[in-house]
Length: 122
Image (tube, rainbow, N blue to C red; front, side):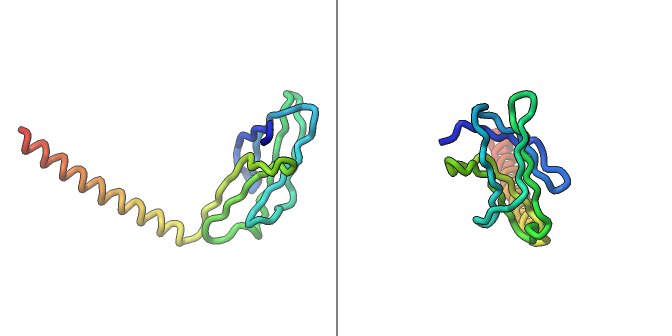
């Protein structure tokens, strides 16, 4: 168990940024993991407000078609503090389109049933 809390601020220009709060008497040891490998480049910087600014660059060679999930882990306790997912590729657009089509079909079914119910009770 860890006493740290990591909140995402943004993902900008290929760098995930967040704010880490926790004990001030110890420096956190964080790593970015992808496909169970450590991704180099994560930095923590203590700020004047008593929190740490965490920056985790996402290397271009790690961005591929499909779903890519990254996790930020506190190494001493092996606790996942945050995660983010990047979706890319044509198959993702197709999968989302299928989901939208299914939702439309279900909505049409519900509308027909509701209209039928309204006619029967009127």
